[in-house]
Amino acid sequence: MRIGIGYDIHRFNGKRPLKLGGVTIPFARGLAGHSDADVLLHAVADALLGAIGAPDLGEQFPPGHPRYRNADSRIFLQQAYRQVRRQGLSIGNIDATVIADQPKLTPYKMRMRRAISALLQVSAARVSVKAKTTEGFAPGKGGIAAQAVVLLTPSKKRQ
Image 1 (cartoon, rainbow, N blue to C red):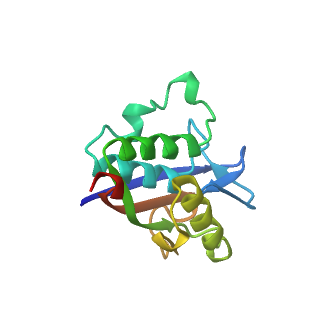
Image 2 (image 1 turned 90 degrees about the vertical axis):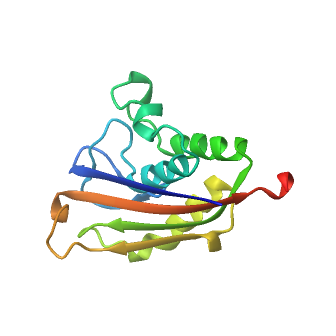
């Protein structure tokens, strides 16, 4: 078994849609970043990469590289998962938390779970997405953060 942890944070930027967990959330402000700034997918991808001891997301997809300008973060997550599979590992479960004072995310948590599970080809029962507020602490109203923990197990094909 392997365990990985991932974290990401981005400031708000009103010039783009807000994407979290592969889902577009209706909100007046998106997140600033070189890619689409989906903090939840970034955190999950970094957790997967960390669990296999691979270079982190920023090393593999440099934020200044023109190729990744406004890139869909789903490609980062899928690439991280391909690396996990090449190591002969499967996802046991993912436990993720989005930290945001706004917008309210409860109505979107199940959609995020389903989107992540579809991208990773696992049951939604193996993916948990929670939403917490900061109660006025950072990032507060200035942005959104996410953290994720993944458990990887040996693939049945290799056992």
